Amino acid sequence: MNKIKIYNTLTGKKEILKPLKGKIINLFVCGPTVYDFSHIGHARTCIIFDCFAKYLKQAGFKVFYLQNITNVDDKIIAKAREKKVLPSDLADAFAKEYLKDMKLLGITSVNKYVLATDYIKEIISQIQRLIDKGYAYKLDDGIYYDISKFKSYGRLSGRTALQAEDSVSRIDYSKNKKNRGDFCLWKFNQHQDGEPVWKSPFGLGRPGWHIEDTAIAEKFFGTQYDIHGGGRDLIFPHHDAEIAQMEAISNKKPMAKYWMHTGFLTLDGQKMSKSLNNSIIITSFLKRHSVEQLRFWIVKNLWSSPINYSEGAMIEVNSSLERIEEFLRKIKAQSAKRKTITQSSKINKLLKKYKEEFYKNLADDFNTPKAFAVIYELVKDVNKLLDLSAEADKSLVSKKDAHEVYEFFEEINKIFDIIDFKKLKTSNVPSEVKELLKIREKFRKNSEWQKADETRIKIENYGFLVDDTKDGSVLRKIENSD
Image (cartoon, rainbow, N blue to C red; front, side, top):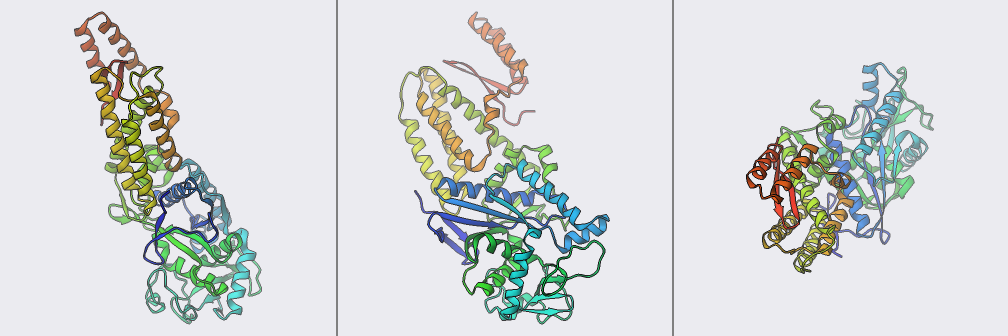
């Protein structure tokens, strides 16, 4: 088993994954702020961590994957006012939509989704401890965190507290703050109709954005755990703020041992986001493409690198998946044969070699581009042997070898979920083409070669090629066919 290395934002380098407690991994990933439908940028982060968690489980780790849902926030309140609905109703509706999206995307590795408003008691407890330790102060509009008191503030993003002063990235505004970079832990009730409010020792109000996550994480994992993940846009100020809160409370470093941040998903080179109004929502995307195509497009790119969306990229993805599916149909047909002429060790050696390379690449910073390059090589080499089998009129791929290749793809799919194996069991060939193939076979048996060739041309007009093998005729979809 290869030692797993992962790029850690906190240290700026790849590190061997060594959980705090043996083979147990506690993983926290920041979920959405639910004031609108989720887009494919959110899908990227969710799919990446879904696959990574499944990979860790396959590697023998016991993973508890926790994801929060921010259902109280300034953005929710502003959108609710715009829509003239209660913030709680808006958040509830979009939280349900988000969970529906996760089901559509095949996200099955998350152990628990939690709503921020279910942990108000824990949030208040953390704020009180920060006040007691001198890290927080009170103003007319709320309780604020004093970033000047936390000497290593900005350690994750590489910003100093002074540099944070110059940022305007989702930091709470108040003219009386001690430092411009100070952020709000508890926002006092502004007496706006319908605004969510809770009682606390410091006054009626609601939590700030950053404190929600640390309170939830402490409730489930304690003040230190293994991996914290999210999109790259959360590094500052959100994750810097989380570190400042949790480490001030516990006086222990680091809050999370490894920090993983997915790269931006861009559209025409611009980051996809709700606020920029350039997002493609998940449900709309899935009307044009399958979930397997979406997952494959996302996972074939390196998790930490930016990727740019285009319809051209999706055409390429569709073509690649079709090649893999066609290959698996051929392998499945080979493994289902009652007899094979020879038992070759060529496939066995190839499979062993490529499996080792595949998992070696996944162990090296979850390098999926290199891992899938190995898969393409395997498909190419096995296809060559299958084609040679047809030419030599003898089987160079044994039933056992074909079965093992097929099983390897099932193993891969447990991590990535990019192949619909149910679809493979049912042919994607139109009934008209199947009937033409039967007619052609009759012509061939009767040595009516001209009629057989004319029928083959009819089949090609439907977008399928016919490969004549010693075991019969096999249909193959023409690439990029309409």
